[in-house]
Length: 275
Image (cartoon, rainbow, N blue to C red):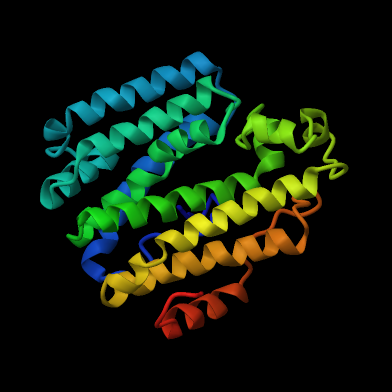
């Protein structure tokens, strides 16, 4: 759900659509999450070094009251957490997911994947709702559906990139059910049941995204518009995945410059949910 100068992502945070008072808090949350994610993903550190650095992040999260007196990333985060009464446990859940990326490379079932999404993606949406002051149970549920679906969409885009890191996030039982093998992913092959497997993943992610889309209509003003933009971005990527019939090996579907005006128009003019 993040974007920065150094990382392509589909869905913006701290955009101009957000109320100005929330841009710095969202940036502080993003900065922490991106930094921790980079420890798990970037560079050529060995697993032990990555785990040690993530463990140090846990120590610093546990001492946020002291960090509030200092500058830097944890100082900014400490002040935002205190000002907006953000649940620190959600930041620990993000660290749990990033740690899991270091230690777990395959997921047996969709339930296992969703358990990962619960910690890798859902905390971001919940933190945003806390910033908005809208933590009604149904809003949290909508947010979880949106965030998990966006994480699933990112997995579909990044099949090849993830495999280079020896990771596969598509459930192994579903890979087997559609007659696909790891060998195909390694060799960028769309033979056999690959297209059907990918369409199955696309359809499920789209249904989940639509299930949560009500949130963008129930939140007012810029907050609702921002969320509708995020949902439109997810739908746009799913459309692109369908257009290439799941062949993400030749070209990774991404949002291009011309997609954004279309998404903004749809988000601004969408007064009711799609049927």
